[in-house]
Amino acid sequence: MIVINTMRDIEVIKEQRKLPNPLIDELEQYFKDIVTNFTGKEILDKYNIQNYGSIFVMENTDNPNKIGTPKYVTIIEIGGTEYYKIVISKDDDSSIVVFSAANSFGAEFDKYISQFVID
Image (spheres, rainbow, N blue to C red):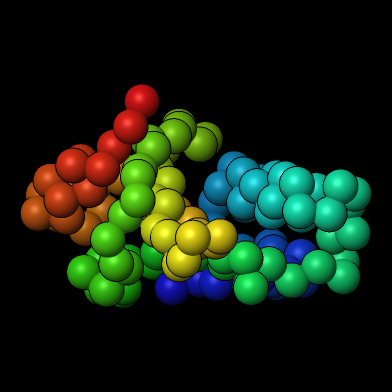
């Protein structure tokens, strides 16, 4: 699983070309939005979101049964591919967000996730 807590994490993903460019762009914008919402400004190179809720990207080798119980899920299209954006509460004040390509982990996982999908 890919973990994003800092802008440097996103830069490393870009350098390693581990993910499709449209997904990287989405993750970068999402990270910027989180930082701006928490701080009121873009202090991207200095901010670590780990205490508030990391961003995760599931890879094909990950076990989807270990992500926890979603609070809710949205389905978004990024670069022509559908992704699950899975929000999981850490506590009352923070959540983690897991991005996963839809239909990547089999029908059982998709059925489970579909219970939490909101419009």
